[in-house]
Length: 446
Image (cartoon, rainbow, N blue to C red; front, side, top):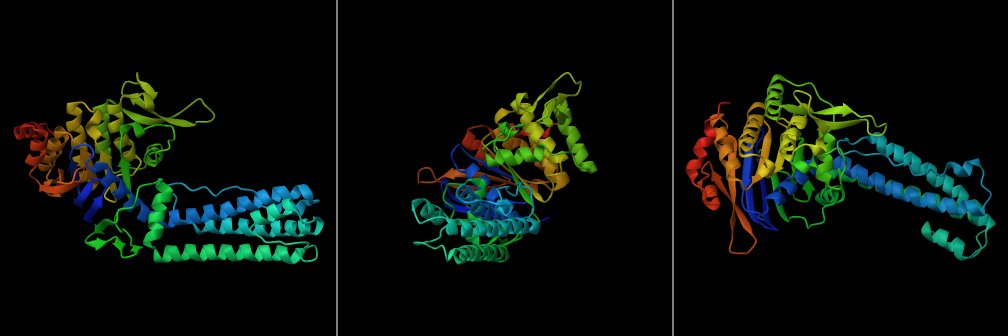
């Protein structure tokens, strides 16, 4: 099983963080100390690397389709001033290639949009030639030509065909340049392209951390001005609130990613996954299920159904504490949790009863022990910290459980993350709670 080390320095509230991720990593600290910032950029690193080709291809396709929309608008104007035949209707109308977060890079997508672009350019070229042959110079003609990035001066009736051919050649060359850049980026994997993908795909408006690194078994992911590959970590899942669990799409990219994963259909599971699922369902006395709706538009929706069937409600109406366990249930049974996955969770205890905090901590420990799941939890709850420590020790995974506390520096609003090893007394001191309280978390039978 691979070991990961994640560093981030001099960025927003984080003065310095050097974190080991090989099992359970627990970040404790007050609000505003940068815990969510650390989770967010780790999510970007993992998923940005694994989806590099897909994100890069997606932007290429979007840029090509943007040109095609320009061609379509110009063609619509030109049709009003020339007699069109059936051939002139071959200017390809916008029908974008669809990409999904889970989609892998597909050469067929690239070929498809290239073919449509070439058809569009040639069809529009024919229309331009006819338009120039049958119209006089003027503001209207100049406006259309300028929109197509063409300079046409005076009467070009005789040269109309050559002007049209120049338009076609220019756009085909542009397509070739864009394609060469796409192929080069996917081959070289430049860091600036990677960071551009992050901004573009995740709507990240903040400045990029200048000192950030992820190591896989001691090997740097950011290698100079290029981004390397992750061999043994396929995805990161970021859960910043149980409220993200919904049937409706949202503007939040993390919520939509989680929604996509929990709304999928179940996978075939092995015995360890089945045991963990049973434990979660026993806690909830029910489960979340995809159920057919009466609406012809919605198809299926996620609902919480109790063991006795007396409760059957949309997941949005379920108690927030139930949702905290439910997203683990759905991720687990849909095959998204395991040794090649990183689960990033912000303050899961926020909506949980004290006893359910312990149960939730137990599930996290068992996910790592039984499946090799890597988990980073950001918390400011002493019960969660103590429960994770006690249960990890009881289950024999304490050596893969790491505790960090955000320590304020002399510089206001900046924090250093201190590695506590297995001694969490400093966390309890920061919460002004007696360390003896920890003893109560190791007594519940597993």
